Length: 130
Image (tube, rainbow, N blue to C red; front, side, top):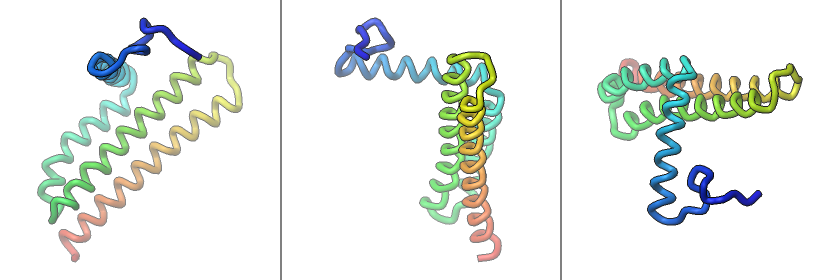
């Protein structure tokens, strides 16, 4: 479906398109910050984990893996929130496909969290037992 230039940056090119994309990203951050407590908690975890990652990681690669693992949880949480928003936009009535879509988004967050936990456990192992 073709959309006109008045729809969130569509039809823009070059720097103007980048500026519009940046504004949309900032608006998205505001939306998720206001609407998702889980996201706010995960941002706090990320901020608290930064100094721990610097101390815990024995190499720059290990430090990066620790930080990126937490960032991945945030990214998946954002995608999960997007799925929930679209499903809610479609309608308020209960539907099995809506439940499945939301449950799969939630599962993705859980798996990203488990993966991050495994990376942190491996770094702890390397630091104290390796």
